[in-house]
Image (cartoon, rainbow, N blue to C red):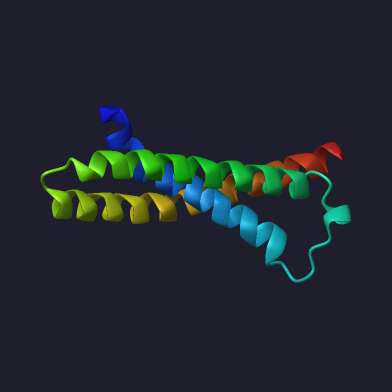
Length: 110
């Protein structure tokens, strides 16, 4: 449980950014048609739902640990800052991976 406490900001950043990226790719693109993206659409739906579930479960476990914490403000500030930084970093990582996978799929003509 102590490891989860230290890893939770990174988990929030990684899976929160993946969920946001999947949401934007599927639901916010104006010219998006699921039939034109046979791999991206199901991946984004599944990955987005799994990311949301992971974030909610980790948040629930983190709140249970947070209640017993003595230095709540310090932990809250550290967690928030690490979460924001990791969120921004992982947005770029997921976008790069998305582009690499997209180019690979086009290259293989799948």
